[in-house]
Length: 137
Image 1 (spheres, rainbow, N blue to C red):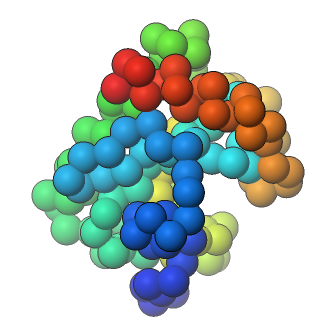
Image 2 (cartoon, one colour; image 1 turned 90 degrees about the horizontal axis):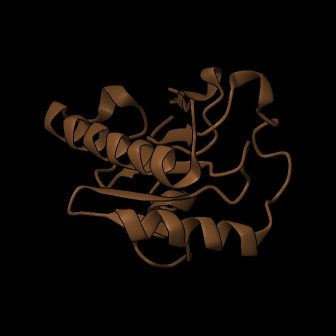
């Protein structure tokens, strides 16, 4: 899978598609998944154009993982998450559907997850969750 500059996450990074942003810095963006597998499902992406973790330079990977930790801490404190599934898929064969590296942060037990991409979430609820998380980040 080569990097496609027109993938949905690239368009979000360019501001061409809106998102429920919860955190942003020079290297990363965190936002709510609109097809959540559980209540509070968030995504963290690097701003660097990488398809898989192997494509991301180590310094950018470190920055991305720092954002993952920040968002997880916010999910624990604001959403009362007792456990958070961190999922990151590399390549189509692993189930990756968007050719831009991304981490799923899903505050739920693995057994409670809905099938990924099964249905769009309640946009009003997602917006409220994004505001709660953004307030602490």
